[in-house]
Structure formats: structure tokens, C-alpha cells
Image (cartoon, rainbow, N blue to C red; front, side, top):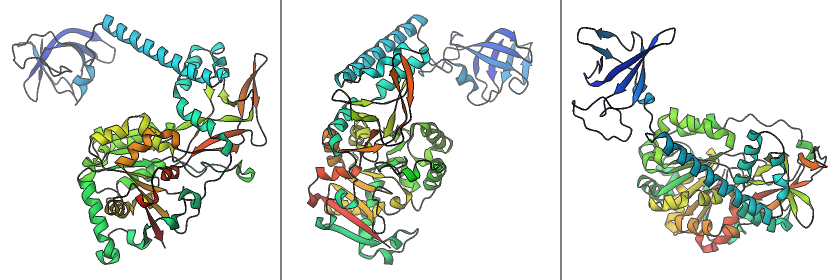
Amino acid sequence: MRVILKETGQVVGTVVNVFNTGASDLLHVVLKSSVLRPNGSGSNSTESGDSGPLIWVPFVEEIVPNVDLTRREMQITPPKGLLELNVRSDERSKKERRQLEWKERKKYQKRLIAAKKKLCEMEQQHIFHGFRFGEKSETSLLADQILSVNSKLLQQALQNIEIASKRWSITESLTGTKLVRNRLRISEKCFTPCTSEEKLGANLNLQEKALHLVSKGKVALVLDMSDQRNHGKEYDPSLAFSVSMENSETSSLQTLLCDDERFVKVEYRLSVPLVLICPADEINSMEKLFISNNYFGFDPEKVWFLEEEKLPVVSSLLEQNRHKILMKSPWEILQSPVGSGGVISLLSSNGIAENLARMSVEYIQVCCSERYISGSSLLLGFVNSKEADIGVQVFEDREDIEEGFGMIFSMDIMKKLTRQINKLQFYAVAKPNSHVELVEKKWVEVDPSSPNSYEFYLTIFSCLNASPLGKICVMEITE
């Protein structure tokens, strides 16, 4: 019996079998060779044979409203996507698929061996103890954890460990901003929605420069949605047992993306590459948010979702002339976010900086708060007008510059930074961390009452060391 789409009259295939599933029957339909081919191949001729893939069609009135026994044909009105959902996109044979799976396993094992070798060179073999315990799922978790360690970045952080517990202040981070000649002081009132040209005054041309660059696809946006509040800060016993604030990043991001006044205008979004950085447990919700909102007008091919950069937490005590990586469980490495500077390594290790360069992007805008975004166009225009490498936005009333940081990087300086990651400066911050240790073949929990470990911190403002003062712009926001 032939199967025809009622709406178009197109013959899609032939019923080859009927299966009773209890509540209703399922029709097994072999598609015509020209229909729903995943690779788009095949003739459009109506003479094409029924030699395509097999699909299932529920035999219910809503989907199969008409059956003509005389003409031996039925009309169907399938919901959008039903037929496509049935078609297997991978048309390779079972043997070919097994060969591919074997190659992927070999590739995985090769990467794992290389990662274990690097950890051995750093004398961190104790991480492998978990392979002798637990189920397959647990040892697989440990293997994934080992692969997730950025060994190159960890080695660099360990070399910087003698600078432990030093706090990065606003004065240090801007290397004495009073020495920067390219300075712009502007009132925060100029950043309210629908700001008049009179308020912007002489700075109107900076905004116009920025909007022109954005409209031409010359600017990429990096939104750091990770929580910067506690990164790089000393341990405070009075706050040790405080309850963390409820995470509302997804809802606040949605509010921001729907605001055409404070964020990138909708008509420009298809031209703007967007990178979102957030904790691992928020990646899925971020992706779903974008999919359900048609990517808020951005091109899906130009949107990246990245997990924030992390590094293992190490013991503050030297053991056999090394700082030992701490284990959260026998199969989990204790790790902590590295802070705002992790943006640079993420753009480098994921090849995004290279992709942006191929897209002819000239500037990368990095920010972490809504307060920054409202004034970003002026900073971009300021950097462009001064032909600077880096632009920094600071608030006069804010002591901690990490809260709401905002920077503009030229593509040239970003290329330099991604090639010279080893020149970025880490700081080791002493903090108490519970962990497990293998003692006489038994796993023992260690729960310290005082700082026993170092968490590594990298501020994005250490990038300023890569550029001469004459190539840096500072925009200071006043009340």
C-alpha cells in the first residue's frame, strides 16, 4: 500500500508491515529513495524505487486520516519532523560504525596516555590510585577528569606559586592608571537608555564609530557569566558557612538579551560572534535558553558556549618537593575556577580566536556584567579612535575592579596573548578545602579547620603587561 502526503500529494513510500503495539498499530514504511535522504542525494523523479530507509508511522486517525483500500493507498498528515526523526542520519554499515567506534576509542586512549604522562612528569601519580577502586563508571569518570586538566596552564600556575596569597588591587591591576594618557572620564548618566545626543556631546562620534564597527561584523562579544565575587579572594572564616546566593544567571541573561537598548541591537546581531562562558552545570540551560528563543537573533554558527576555565587545587604543604593535587573523591579531582583571566586561555585552547580572525573580526569585547555593557560602545569607539590595543572600563565608586570588569582587545593583541599564555601571571590563594587521601589502602576524608591548599587565580588585568601604556585606553565612569 502506497503512502502519500495529503498536503502535497507526494508519494513518500510503501507500507511493508504492520505491528500491533496494544493501544494502536505502527506502520513500517520503506521510503522512496528520493525522499528524506540525509545527504540530500537521490533523484526527484517519481519513478524512483522504494529502496530508501525504513521509518515508523503511528496508525492513528490524526496522522492517517484516509485509507483507500480500492486504490491501495493511504494519505498521511504527519506532525512536522516526524518522518525526519525516524530516518537514521548515519547510513554507514554496522561494520563501518564499529570500525569508527574502535578508532574513537583508540584516539581517546592515546589522549589519556598523553595526559597521564604529563601528570607523571609533574609527579602527580597519586591521581591514578582511583583506577584500582570502584566500578567502570567511576574509573571512566576519573579518566575524563584527567583529560580535563589543562597541564600546560597548571605547570605555569605551579611555577608562580611563590606569589601565594597576594591580592590584586585596582592600583596594581591598572599599573598606575594615572600614567595612562589615553583617558576618558564620563558620567554614568550618559549610559541610560535613549541617551540624548546633547548628553553625549563630543563623545557622540565615539558611539557612532562603535556602532559602525558592530554593524560590519568587526566586533565579537565575550560574556563571562561565571561568578567572580569570590575568585582570588583570601579565606574569610566569618563567611565560611554562609549560604550562597541563588543562581539567577539564566534569567538575568535573558532579560539582558531581550533589551534592545542596553545590548547589541537586534538588526546587528547576525553579524556579531558571541561567546558565553559559564560554570559547567549551567551550559545546558544556557543552550536551551538560546534554542528556545531562536538564538535571540544571533547566528547559531557564530555562538559558542564554553565551560569556565578551571585548575586543580593543590596542597599548600610541600611533599617531596611538590604541591600535591587534591582529590574530591577517589575519582574526582578537586578543581576551582581560575577567574576572569581564564577567558584568554579558553579563546586560545578552543581555537575561537583563530576563527574570529578568519571572520575578519577586529575587536573582542570581554565583559561580565550588565552595568558594563551599557557603556561598551563608547569604550569601543574610544579604543578605535586612539588605535589602541586594549581598552579598560572602570567605575570610580568601585573598590574591586573584578566586579563588573569590562575590556576591549584588538585582534592583534589577542593573537599575541593567546600565543604567550605563559606570560600571564597566576596567584595562589590559600583556602581550606576538604578532600580525600589514600592511607594504607583506605580512603580517608580530610576536613581542615584552616587553609590547607592553594587555589590558582588569574586576573584578566594581567593582560595589561603585554601592551605599552601608550596603547592602553582607560574609560572611568563617574556618578
